[in-house]
Image (cartoon, one colour):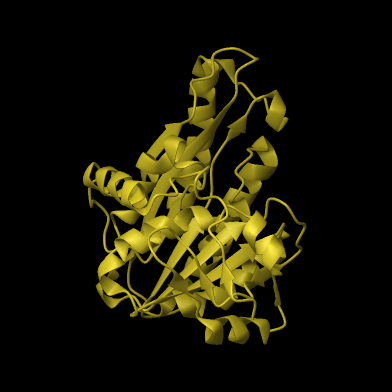
Amino acid sequence: MSGKRSASHAGSWYSGSGQKLSSELDNWLANANATHTPAKAVIAPHAGYAYCGACSAWAYKQIDPSNIKRVFILGPSHHVYLSGCAVTSCESYETPLGDLPIDREICSELVKTGHFQKMNKSVDEDEHSIEMHLPYVAKVFENYQGRFKIVPVLVGSLKADKEQSYGRIFSKYLKDPQNLFIISSDFCHWGSRFSYTYHDKSYGKIYQSIEAVDKMGMDLIEQVDPRGFHSYLKEFGNTICGRHPIAVLLHAVDTLASESGNGKMSLQILAISQSNKCKTDSDSSVSYASASLVFS
């Protein structure tokens, strides 16, 4: 194992001061409502907190930490190419609110399937998609320190069949009532710097077109339709950076739904926002959304 992963984005993407960060998170959580709880899984963004901290709170507000022993965090890889998935090789992850221990037993169990490799520490620390969720996890679980561990998973550029395969692998963990899944994703990255400038003028201004295209994808996510989601991405090319982790979750839920006796599952989008309201071709923005999956 590689020891502790440092909070490499603290002080830039979010506050490096534990006291200030704790206050910010408390404020965002206080302004969100628990409307779809207790969450079995959440989807939340991974941008700088100045852009998406308030939106993320809606996902984290749905979590009841009292019976959770293990938190899986699935984030997309932004800096290295992966055709599969990778788990951390570290023993703990640092946050300004305290260190989070890794469930090394589950990481080893995943590697033994032959479908997971291990990240080296530099790859781990370069990636922000998992780290941006750690302070919220530390905050929501602050009264349960020592009672839970995390399982960070870096998700690569998966083909459709691999999304389904990983969904099947994770379905047994999703089924466990003591496990929680966090899916890390931003939504539409719009603008020339993102090489995505789709604009359907029938919806009005650019930002309204972005909202409409994002909503198409969100509707399919709520319907837990992994194949429809794949077709939608192929048709519109929407730059949802966590599309592969989302698809893995959808396939995991779909796998459980096909089994008998798993009860009702409901996935709801709870909050959406944009970093900027694009009105001209020179503008750019990133969209954010929070969602919660509930089993009943």
